[in-house]
Image (tube, rainbow, N blue to C red; front, side, top):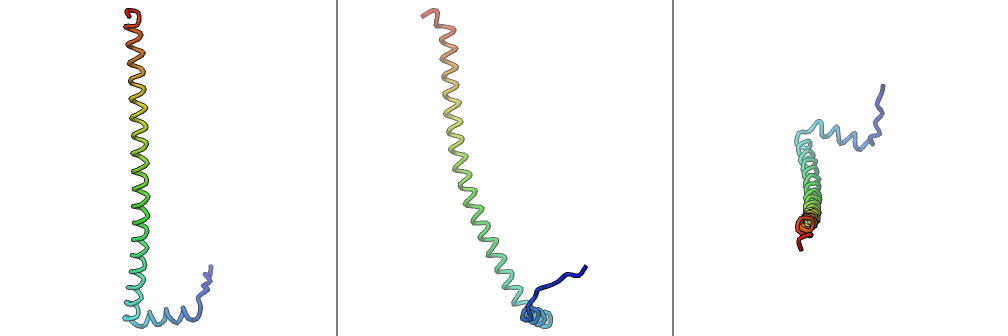
Length: 89
């Protein structure tokens, strides 16, 4: 199966220059490397923001769960005490 490439003549010429000249190859590789690092930095910053939002959301959920558990505990204690001591009072 032949793979068609839609490379422009300029791209082919740049690839030929890069392949034949080590200094050009090193310079282009450095630029590519810096671009990849910049993309990773942006992705990492984005992930940090998402992580912060998740932590805030979890702390809100934890508070809701604690309030709910506390309310249920006191309700059950009230029912128990009423059942046990309600007839005496």
